[in-house]
Amino acid sequence: MIELRTPREIEEMRPAGRFIADVLLACRDAAKPGVNLLEIDALAHRMIKDRGATSCYIDYHPSFGAMPFGKVICTSVNDAVLHGLPHDYALQDGDLLSLDFAASVDGWVADSALSVVVGQAPDAQRAAGDKKLITTTEEALAAGIAAATVGHKIGDISAAIAEVGHAAGYDINTDFGGHGVGRTMHGDPHVPNDGRAGRGFPLKPGLVIAIEPWFLETTDEIYTDPDGWTLRSADGSRGAHSEHTIAITADGPVVLTER
Image (cartoon, rainbow, N blue to C red; front, side, top):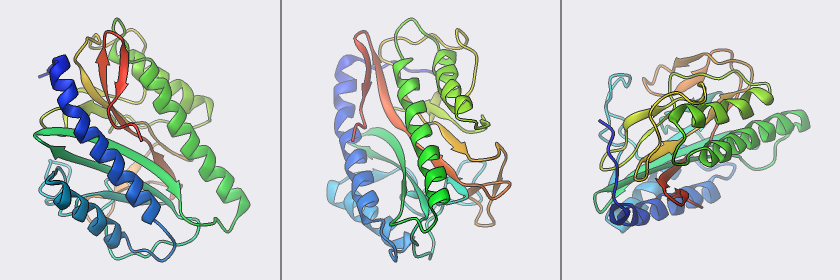
């Protein structure tokens, strides 16, 4: 069911958005060569506890997950692009790390993601490819947000994202994408990263959604890692992911997770 939020409720969601942004920035800054993914998860866990927030991930067990997630942040490295389960791995120079985080503050959820290259990439060509991949997801996110205006439809957001991704030469997977956000992390409507303009649910004031383009370098096919959660590219190529929670208002889209 698609729910619309009142202006007051959107204001009540702002603290959750600010908290999500703060945690992602702290984890991004902590992501140095030699830092373990479990340390990043522990940092996010401490920040949740200190804020009195509630993790959306630790008990999360949808049909596509092998078991409850058990951690509080997704850490996807290199050929992993989504749902990266933190594990005993020390980051290395040149790793492409995607961080995806959602939590509930005072009963309201926000969700956001970013990607970053760790340390100094040892190979110039690899560094250029990673920069292009990350920049393209960020530009696609900006295009999707710009299309999220009253009078447009979900398909307009999807088409705007896809235009950026295809122009950069990437194929686009639509198995996972954006979604409604509110009292829970995932709700209706689904916001795919490719679609036809003018199609789908009409965008109305009060609709709160997460827009999240993610692209893989040379494929649109993914598989699930043996850990039961991490989604990796089928051909070993790298992936990047950018996401914001936004509210659609009569005055235009409001980014609740602005960093």
